[in-house]
Length: 209
Length: 264
Image (tube, rainbow over all chains, first blue to last red; front, side, top):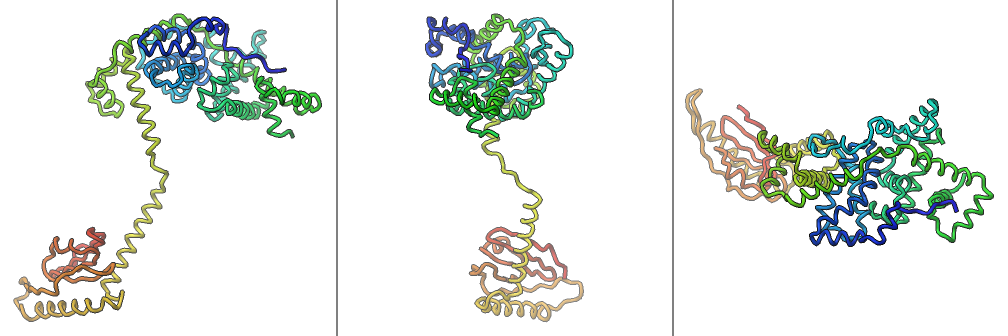
């Protein structure tokens, strides 16, 4: 079989002994504010990654992530299935990312420079130049950068659901069920959005594949 | 050219989500069909490109978690009061006075609860705008149509004034003629005065009554009376106040066209 087993990350096993997302949500609703910190720890990477793929800018992605957690905290009591916190949060992240308008002047509070690593790698990453450029060959690096840019453009041309399905499922490797929760659709529909997005990307990227 | 169904199956196969029962058949097909294999390879290359295209920049995750946690803490500790919320609503509407706006913006820098409230109001505004968005209208065509309709109504009204609409209204027309004749007689004979002097005549014609048809001509001699004019449900009104004449066309209680003042 060609498909690989899907796991969220190494923290999965650890979660089995830790409280579930649903338990943490319920504790938080009951007034145990610190339970939310556990959820922040579990999902911040995924939130930043999804937002970064959609926005193409890490500063914006960090802001969206913070806002998404704040919004989630403020609306926690409206979450109907506490166990589905992850997908629900990703829905907030994707909505905020898709509707994102820069408003940095309103957020002097987020110390972005303290949150990021060295500037050089950040710029290289954000420009999409890291794709298969590990050998340091300048020609290859140039082609890689071009391809990275082309991919970002192609991804931006997809309809929102296809783009989100590709970002969450194919790139971030989130479980299909969670993606379905985020997109408010069935698992079968996620497969279909991934397929349709993939087909369009293949067409848009045909000179590179 | 392979079918979309087969391409969909290949896509799921690559993702490991193809149902167990379909997997063996697809693998057999991949073994025998070079084009199906090519599609699988293209999808695989695309996946690799997507995953490798932009790696996530180095983020200090612990620091980020602390920052978000502090914001959440602040949000939990300082829910916004009604007055601030009102200011925020005005801010979103662009109605907050200049002085208060600067103060609110300063507060927004450090108050996540206020920022969340702003986002909620903006979101509400977007949803409202979408929900009640006016469909696309060709304003030029619409104005032409309205203009045509008004012209047509005016045309119909003039037609009615010429009293040739329906035979059943001839009776009323006759009575109007009598009144008009009386008026002319009084104006030309009864009240003879020197040139340039005002001529007065007061003739009370048949009582005004509700018009039965959609456009009935009524002639009123004497001062125009708004109360009288408005009493017509549907009427063309000719007001003759010698030596000036004023014509208005009414549809229901609403005057749809006025001639302006004619000087005789």
